[in-house]
Image (cartoon, rainbow, N blue to C red; front, side, top):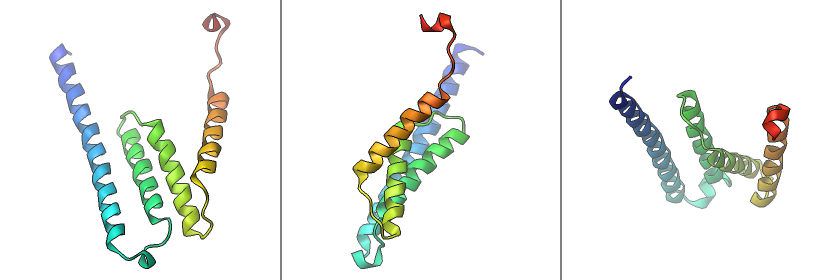
Length: 124
């Protein structure tokens, strides 16, 4: 492959990632507008958080399936929003800060559990 072909490939992938990001923003704005359009009593508590969580996790899932790099921070935010929204739907709202602490702790444990074993030479 020539440098020009490699650059064209990278440009196409960047455009694809940008397209996915724009789809996510479009969905976010549609959800926000739709929720504001209806009276509060018609929209269940937690709808916004639930939808934002689905959008963030869904966009990362699509990127992962398509072979693009995912964003750990938006996955983290998506999980928080999804859990908080689900809990509110179920009538048991939870605070966002405790969820952040729990998920942060879980992520630390997952990193420790799945950390590759290093050889003594790599530790030096």
